[in-house]
Amino acid sequence: MQVNPVIEKELKIKMRGWKAPTLITVYLGFLGLIVFLNFLGSKVISPNNVTQFNPPIALNSYYSLATFQLLMLAFITPAMTGGAISGERERQTLDLLLCTNLSPFSVVIGKIFVSIAHVILLIAASLPILGTVFLYGGIGITDLLVLFAFYLATAIMLGSMGIFYSSIFKRSSVSMIMSYITVLFLLFGTIIIYGIWSSIFSNNTGIPPGIGHTMAFMFPNPIYGFGSILYGSSYGAGIPGGLSGIISTVIPMSGSVYGGNTPNTTFPMFLGIQFKPWMANITFDLIVSFLFIFVSTIRIQPAKRFRLRIRRKKSQLEAQIIPKN
Amino acid sequence: MLVIENLVKRYGKFKAVDGLSLEIDKGHIYGFVGPNGAGKTTTMKIIAGLLKPTQGRVIVNGTDVSVDPRGVKRKIGYMPDFFGVYDDLKVTEYMNFYCGVYHIPRPERRKITGQLLDLVDLSVKKDAYVDSLSRGMKQRLCLARSLIHNPELLILDEPASGLDPRARIEMKEILKELKGMGKTILISSHILPELAEVCSSIGIIEHGKMVVSGTVDEILKKTAKKKTIRIRTLDNLESALKYIEEQPSMSGISINSDFIDADFDGNSQILSEILKGMVMNGIPVTSFSELEGSLESVFMHLTEGGIQDAS
Image 1 (cartoon, rainbow over the protein chains, first blue to last red):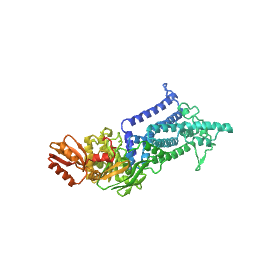
Image 2 (cartoon, each protein chain N blue to C red):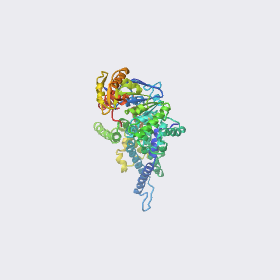
Image 3 (cartoon, each protein chain N blue to C red):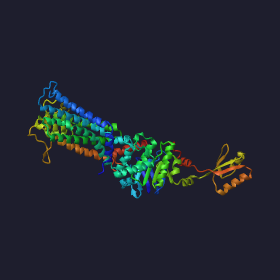
């Protein structure tokens, strides 16, 4: 089987030298420190050697780590992909790739894979630390797998978004800024829009919005999908009431927006299954990723057959001002 | 091998290439000459499948670029005028990457890489990082890269630009070697002597149009309307000048310290009569010769002085 040469080359460059192992070591050390401090602060480990069995502390560690990883994913992935195509343009290597038999699709897929591979490697390497929660129970292996699948879908979406902007804009800095603006909109813009709408809705009708309404506004938000996974884990206990620090900052909404923890919550049905918020979010991620990849492939295709009219007008204008050769 | 028919590339109202046609036979080196902005790079990018023509056809060994661009890409090796390299790769890794791009089986990659690095004289640098190479070495590495899939047609856009004289000579030697291997090469440059030496034929392009095309000799014959005669005498250059000025077939006469140049419009019979007359009138003629046509002067004349300084 032929390995995509773009993947092979980029992985070789990224993993060469001391940077990658150092990054992984520092990252895992940092996660380990979070767990250690969490246990230390809750007196599970204490200077007086007073130990106690306190499962919610382990859950708190798990939530903190999971949230930290989501933030890492949201803010590192665009930086890694934002310059993927525009960087090739800036280095003047894109034409060399496109005049070969390598298809634009292979270039795009290779770039996305490599960009998210680094982030996924960090997350996969952290699974043993996340697994400390198993010592105390409360989180099942299925919860961990669902969380990992969610991370993967989010990374693919953010990675393909970075590639999309990178194929649109010639300068990497512009594409990265656009990627971050979009990430901030997805993370917080949707919450603000939903907050405004829900208050108007509640004022007019006298009842709070239902889960269907919430999902209709919040489905693109990774925090919403993430929150619903955390809320659905820990065997119905929900996010602990005393949740503090990083998680309450990132997930400011109450449990009701995830459908509550009562068995009577009616989620929208899709193909005979209850369509939970994280499922809606993953579905959104995959559809949007497909569109981003499709448009990026078209954008970098040499001798394009499909062109946006606005783009053609722009290039006409450029040609009139500075005839290139 | 390469047929270009009525090629047009428009950007709005601006025509980068305007009805350009040419044919290159297998095994020939064709030099594409023209001032900056003449349409050379645009034409080459269209042949390489990187730009879509507005009108016209490009056929590479029977395959139309617009109909089967991937088929054409298998047949051509393209070296752009400005290109980048992946600095974090070693020379062999760089070549290995492009072997992968061209789907060359792994067992064959080492052999092909070795042969091509030998060809461009970079074998000693095979374990060096690409960013440590000089510009000339990077140019040669890019040339080796464009040969990885053994293309039938090579498109080299200004391959010698920015190179020092030694690197230019080395590049010229490589081109001669490639010609010996039977490769068809389309090469652009704005340095005429460089092309005249290695090319089977050349085409001069300006404002997207082919001004003249053919072998160097053919072009000189086509474009030289008047011959320039240079006359030297032992002494008494003034009497020679007076005699020349009396001849109706001579014009544009200029006198220098020890010779006279004059444009001659006539046949060989008239020319011999003039020489005979000078001798009979006691003018001590030591040299009476037709100046070789200068390709550069032809180029300047045809492109209205638009040539840029050679870089």
